[in-house]
Every structure is written in C-alpha cells, then in structure tokens.
Image (cartoon, rainbow, N blue to C red; front, side):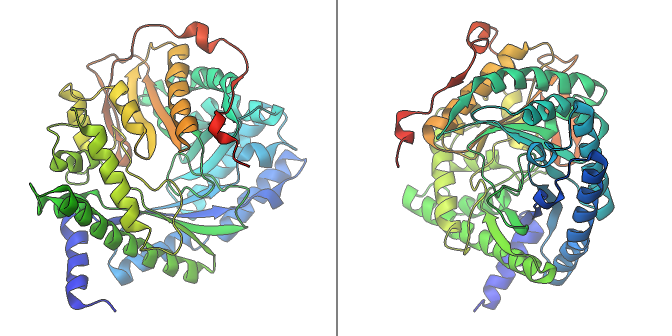
Length: 454
C-alpha cells in the first residue's frame, strides 16, 4: 500500500522537481500493410495508424488529469519502413511518399513524433534499404513529425562500414536541405549500434519485428528528482550516495509503471516495457549534467566525470529494475548536449569536448546525442565519428548512437536553436585530422571475438 507520505512526496517531485513521464509510445506493426502498389501501401498505412492510435493522445491526457502526472509526449513507432515498403517502393520518391503518409497520420492522431522511417543494415543492404537511406534527407525536409534511424552495426554482425560511409554523406545532405532551419533535419536522424526493438524515445524508436501487432512502451524521466535527492546527502560516502540514487530511481519508475498499465488497459493494447532512462530537457533543474556536478565534478568533462556517470547509470538501473515487471528500451542516463542546459554550459565553459562525450558513452545510454558541429565538416569525418561510436557499442555489447548536426553556415562559437524539447546547441570543434582513407575502405568490420557465444 502507498501511504500518505509517499503521495505527498510524489506530488513534491512533480510540482518542484520536474518529474514527468517523458513519453507514451504506441508501437504499431505495419507488416500487414505490405502491398506491391505504392498507393495501396500508403492508404493501408494511414488507415491502420489512424485506427490503432485514434485514442492515444486523448487517453494520455485523461491519465494526466486523473493522476496528476505530466505526460510530456505521446508518440508512435512503426515497423522499419525499408521492410514495409520494399515490395512497392521502387524509387526514392516512393519512399518519400511513405514518409509524407506517416507525417499526415501523425498529425491526424495528434502525436508529436512518429519513428520508424528506418533501415536495419548492420551487415549488408538490400535495394529497398539503399533507396530508403537515400530518401532520408528529402523525407526529413518535407515532413514535420517524422524521425528516422539507421542501424549500422551490432555485436553479433560487426559494423557495416559501407553504410557508415553512406550515412556521413546522408547526414550532410539532410543538413543542407534544412539549412534554413539550422539544419533541423539532422536533429530527427540517428544512427545506432545494437538498437533495441522496444525503445520509446525518439529519434531512434521503431517497432521491431520481434514485437506484436501493437504495444505500449513508456519512457519515464526524473533528473531533477535525482539531483534533489542526492543534494540532501552531500558530502556523505559512496554507500549513502548509491543507496539514495537507487531508492529515488525506484520511486520514479513506479510512476512510469502505473502510467504504462493504465494506458495499456484503456487502449486495450499490451504493455511492453518501461524505459528507465534519465532524459533531460532544456528546462532549468531537469539536467543530467547537474546530477554529475552534485556527485562532485565541477563541470561535466572534468576528470572523474566518466566514473560519476557510471555510478549514476548503474544505480538508476538497480533501483528501477525492481519497480517494473518489464524493463527495456535504452534504460540509462542520456547525455544530449542541446537538450541539457548543464551540458550546454559545460561546452561553453570549455570543459566538455566530443572526445570526452565519446568516453562517457562507454558507461551510459546511447552516445553522441544532439551534437552540433561546423557545417563545413567533411562527410568522411562525420563517418569517422560514427564509426568510433559503433565500435564502442559493438565491443561493449551495448546500444550506442550518433545524432550529429553539421550546421550549414555555422562555425565554432555559433549556436543552433531548435526550440522546445530539442533546445539549442553550441557548435563544437571537430578534430581537424582526416580519416578519409579509413572510411573509403569497402566492406565491414567483423564482429568481435566475444560475440561467438552459441
């Protein structure tokens, strides 16, 4: 039973410490929409999304109102479109038309993002994969709510370096086609290694082929709650610090579990997972960087930052996993730059670099996220950054990702500003030395020796 003290404590978390459910994401399988005719495919996709997700937003608002728990985003993820569209889409324009259909469906049902304009190419590419990837820049430039992802590697398959090289070019093209909006297209495009099938967070969410016809996945977040809790034990030993984070993560996750079950019951859709990730926002007091500072580093990027982040990530998982019957997705601390005011301040102070963020990836969730770099950065250098992150994920058997924005016309010292959840980002310097010869090698990097565990 929940006592009155716990009720009051949860209310305090919501009102003063930015506790919220970051997203309810409805995963929808589109495999039964496959058709050899592109018009029929688009019609089936639109009709199914509108039918299955018709009550998603209204249900989320009802739960918010009845339980007093803010639910920031209501979103949809769909089966990777390279799989769904392969029979009908014979040109890049065909895939763009599917993106426009998804965008229109998202607007009709009222969600803020729809993920799954995706291709899974960790080992090789089909012609449909290739066409979809080439269509991404235009698709992101002509839509408002589409998010796109491409899976480039895994611990089991290695890294598809041909796809890595291609994505360096695609990211630059997406930046150029949305240059009038600070290269916004790249903020909705992510590449991944070891991508989970049940991730509720954008831009990497897609409804994996291991999933059923539909599922509710919830992402809950409370950096402000964790920061406040550990501020009360400032200066005490690691045992007290770790116990405090664990207990707080448990409480935060219970909120997500409650919302997930309510949404599942009301929508008559199976409950999938709760994602334990600490996801920051640009709001003051909702920062993972502030937690690291409270743990004891002057600024994120200072010596000791990776150790502090490792501790945080582990204790969040240990506390959260006991609070939910099913945990999945990414489940770790996010360290995006543009979406975290504390990270922005650390970059501006000269404490945080791309190389340090890359090192922090080894112990947290995702990777180089919402990083803005000079617009004249060569595509081969972007591909090299991607390759480094994919290697970290592959060798360490974890999800890693890159969401990088080569802001056209911008240089170090400038900023890009997207507003809302995407925030703003200072342009970060990129190592000027070339990796062109590496990136232009053909083929793939083999899976590591420890992947052979049958």
